[in-house]
Length: 278
Image 1: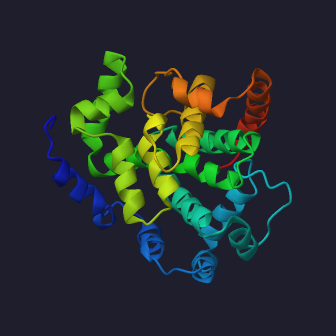
Image 2: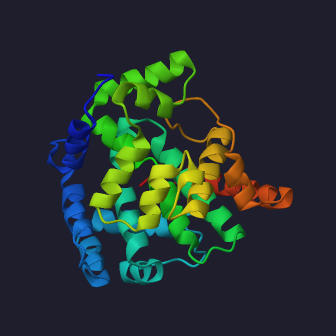
């Protein structure tokens, strides 16, 4: 399979919603997300008509992932507060949550940890929309889920390659598929009409210095990924802790005190998140 035809692979991934293993709610959601004219109102109704989804969304919004200290009690309030692109990302996150738990034990926790870390770094850097950074962190590894769903045995082998060869899962994927979860995730993010910045973060979280649309956001998720791995929270497919990309480190320009603050709050939030079962 090492020489897989990328066009073939891309076509299979882009038709992921035809897989029998995809839950009905996710299929319906993708229809809503892909509609370029979808309104906040329609999204609100879509969530409200599904009690399980409503519960998950409200749990997430009131969790350390977002850091809204006031309790948000209604879907309408959540949607207005977060805005369309964040809500779309959040919905995708909670809808793939069970798939993440089934496909790679620990990937959901890793993604949640990255969502929290990214928001904390974004707040520290004074970004206008720290909630967007939280979605970047939550969805950065969506490509892994897509690859596992479409090629489960192959992905098991890639994880084994990573383990035996002391490789990152990124390198193991490249060797097996000829591409990586970053590219696969970005194809889908485009198909789902996600904001350009989010597409970039998904594509470049391993190489943030190459991002054109979202260099700062990509650097934030890159660092979040490393911090969460170093803390040993969740599992992202390998046991490697990469060095921080030097250009990203310079761009973020965090002081030791900043980093201490971020790590302190991250620690408390991760402990609170351990109870966050959707």
